[in-house]
Image (cartoon, rainbow, N blue to C red; front, side, top):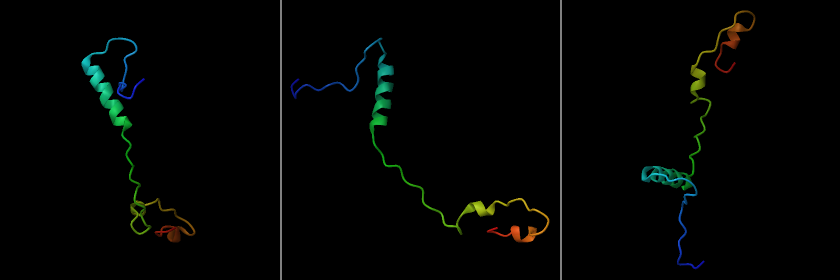
Length: 72
């Protein structure tokens, strides 16, 4: 094979897809072939964490008052 010949990106092996089906397949393959770096989530410090705003159930009995604190 010489260097002047360009191989097709996709080749239909079986069946006769319509122009719309080939366009959809080409769009999907092109989108999947792009490599993108995914942004990493920004770490959240303990003071900025919103999980502490959700109230946990309060338990009665010995030590219940102390367990109701923020970092119990």
